[in-house]
Image (cartoon, rainbow over all chains, first blue to last red; front, side, top):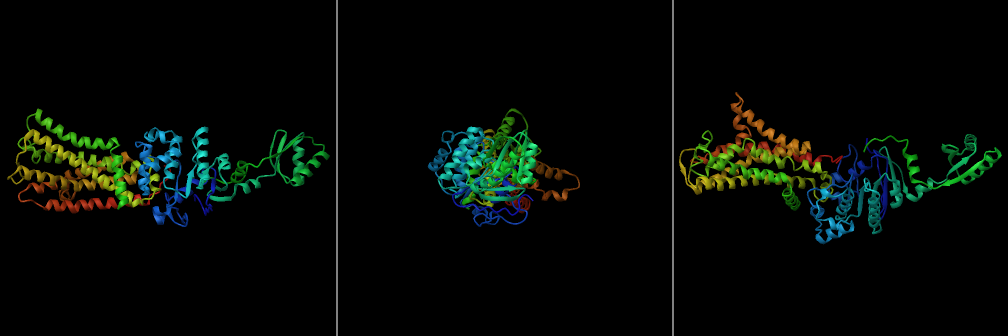
Length: 289
Length: 271
């Protein structure tokens, strides 16, 4: 089973990070939401509508792409958008299409065939194509994947601008930095199931309370941690990491002193989405793309 | 209906930007010209086919001879070029997911594509017919034809019969286009669909020449490519034309419906 009982609650104005390792079921979920694949069992609801029962009507107010946007390579960027605007029946004219192209900084390449576009340009054209639908909800599947650093920066800036303009965005990604920078809410999917959904702030708060201890005797220090009930999360040459409350840290340092274990350094580590993500997903087997 | 027209209009626009469209239409125009040039530089004529002996007496015999030659592989190939590609190319380009996430239903998109494939077959037949009439008339004159019943038919009436012949010829061509659509939807591979469609037409002809299968020959799809000869009899023999109409419907509708279902229900993954 690729995904099971996935329920995402996205509020208007959210930039919603949909996180998961490769094969966790992110793209499968988005494909089902867009009506591109049928679930083997059960159903899909988007704004209460079923894409498989309601057809194209289920996607009213929704736009986006999965696994990278695709276009007709022998048509220009503008012609591709004209075609898609016609398929939407929204009557987007030349002015609106050019305005959208300008927003994604492709107006000067509008007459060129898409076959000659770079990966980053196609990604941006994909967003332009989505915006032509005047969506309330924008679904983006790893929009920065394959982009060079400048392209990633531009893509994030574009998503940020759209979000600032009030658009609700669901952003599927496995780039933690991207999600931390852009999203206010996140869901983590692993092995086809949602294992955590909350605001980014709350999620990061659960990852707080981690420390790195550099010591003269890491073996003895580890024994003391365990005797005090402090959870050791990692160990290296002359150091170990642990998770603890401030009171536990105070007790540990006293115990280390009494045991004549020297402390070179004790550092409180910042909350990291990446670390939390790895902790949550490491044990889960991958089942589908 | 509006959605179908939108798709149809854009499918035509896409076609005029693709080389394969010009390849097929170019062949439809080139073959009559090559035939007339060959007729000009060589003696004799194709006496073993209907109207072959009259190609030097009336230019209007030339399009009819070409209809017979074209049914072997030329018209099936031209038809397959677009019918076999029109769905498969969307999968190849990965654009199926792009158009399926807009506001048109899959049924509207399929209908627009099917009508486009049929339009292309019509365009190829018209291109060949017009070119053959013009080139043939230039070579052998706008003269009366001798019908298959041995009577002379005036040139203007013969021209009308040639047009009607091409129209009837479109019936089996439409059935081939429907089969091409099915392979296009089923294989999602242009080359496989185009070659498969051509093989289908050739297989029908092969069955037609196998010994002991004479009883099925009148019901083969490829036999319907000769139904137009009913118009060239005096009086007109409607029997082959009527049989071509219902038989080609029988050959066309099942694959068309199957292609529609595949298009409607197919999952779009990994593109």
